[in-house]
Image (cartoon, rainbow, N blue to C red; front, side, top):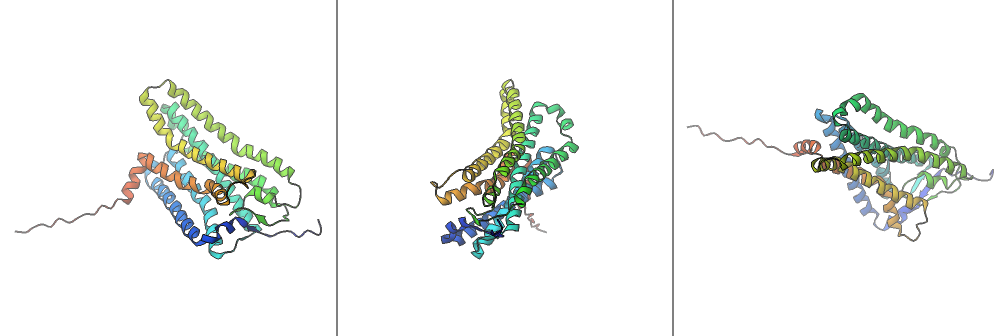
Length: 317
């Protein structure tokens, strides 16, 4: 190992597939990023300004939007820089920073969705005790736990990646991902793969079980409820279910594209699959909640509705 020189920068080779129309991709991604920022910041602003939206459900939605801004900002500005500069190299330091940001974004997203499923369970199954079970203090504790748990657990696992030395510099993506970087390590990665499975279990299983438990209880209550109550429960849960399904699609695409041999799939399709997880949830979540929930939709409409006070001319006789 003494003769091996450590790699300090990497080449994101997936950009070569975008070279022919890179300025079009740049314009598209720039508009997409501005749209993501706009829809999320509008949602955050409305929830923060309206005092009636400071309840648990709306504050959880607000954190989902904050995380969307965090994740998209960790991805899209660097992509825009690579496309504009025609330089597809990335330093080890920036690569590690991007990995930490993108992976914690994904973990926080699932944590908040799990907390939101618990919120829907309490609202539907224990409506009379909702504010007692989900007090303001507990709400802030769940929000803090959603963020701190992601940063701490992934951070402990990420130490193994930081300590590694890398002997290859080719990453077949448009961004840095932990598994793609670890494969370039000079030494055997079996131990880190084992620890990685344990980390995935800690970062996924409790949240998935929480979502399954919450909706199992909601389904149990709905089976014995009236049709009116069932319709109301469906209306209450529909935005969250759409957000969970959207997230699940993104996870599925990312796992398929990073863990399995996808050489038979067109390269641009693979790029799309890897980006879905990082683009579509931040883009669609604010739209889903902004349109479907009247308490949010009405303030947004008021925010952008232009009411012009027209002066009525008065004739003086």
